[in-house]
Length: 333
View 1 (cartoon, one colour):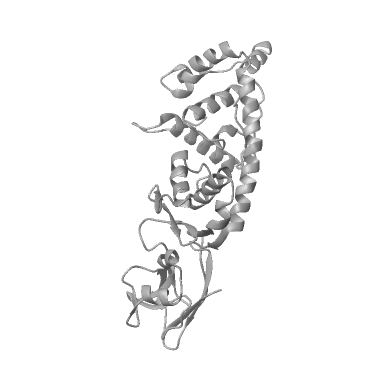
View 2: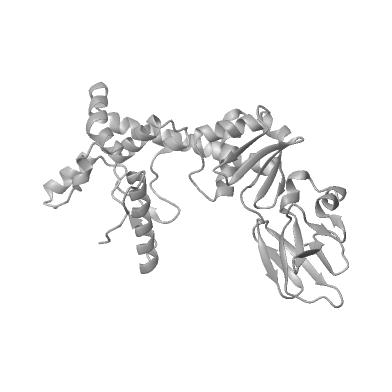
């Protein structure tokens, strides 16, 4: 048994506890080299989850409910059975069980749904638990279709993908149904944020306004910025600069994971490391010229310039990707 310390004054205790439980389970799996770990979620938990998400305004993506299996190896073998079925089995076979006393505290939204909302719904439809589970299955199947279509759109519309900046052609996007475009938006932002749960419907709506030309830009959690540029929509990292910094001690091929690019670095005669590769910063100068002006003359698209790799030695820019300089040469591989 593991006791989780969640701290005091947690803003969303239920969600914080849920995440804490899963962290503990995955840690136990890792420490013991288990491939799978089973939780006791039932069909009732599925119904409660869907009702909770519906009340919060979730879209179809959230209405596919709890899955039988997660990618990290957590499985839910009891999800097809009701809580009553499991309780009956335990009574008939003299199996003791313990109920967490906090499960009856209706100050928590999930408990309020369990003890007050669902009993009212059962007065309308006694089979509400099973019918809600069936709805989750339908939503899951339709989600798979939308996810496939959105994935195809991400691939078809992509003009540039540097990891922390992604550029898509608007022409193909605007021809697709809104539901597919919204799922496309969720997929791109989820990838940039590295959060599988994505963003809420309000944020999706704001980004759709950018896509449809109703607003010029939108920021997400101060981490991602979405803008229109000419006939494209651009998703890129926001926040403090530089966006990446690497120290290079010797020439050769250097992989920059943030932009998912490999750079070939060559030191010219007399030049020695270490040098620093980082993204361009406002005010950078090289050989008497503004780097921003050089990038413009090179035809680098405006949204990409802030992520462009430059080489710095002793605080001065001595080279940049795609341009031969007096001291170094750096090219994309």
